[in-house]
Amino acid sequence: MDEKTKYIAIHVLLKAADIAKFLNISKSMAYRLMQTGEIPTVSIGNAKRVRPLDLHDFINTNLTETNAKK
View 1 (cartoon, rainbow, N blue to C red):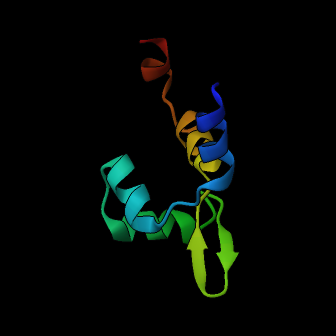
View 2: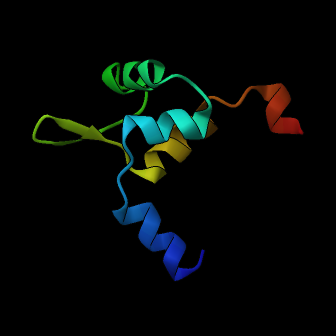
């Protein structure tokens, strides 16, 4: 992993809209995943944000066996 990728993975925080675009889901579904704790969040006042590493972990955790073998 290069330095820029490491920096982004550690320091950038994603909004629900970013999560929705990345996962190709609705913003309300992204909020739901964040509210239920399926995707861990960082609280900044009333705002909730997601670390890219946590989004990556969520995706890996939800891989189906069929998809994982491709």
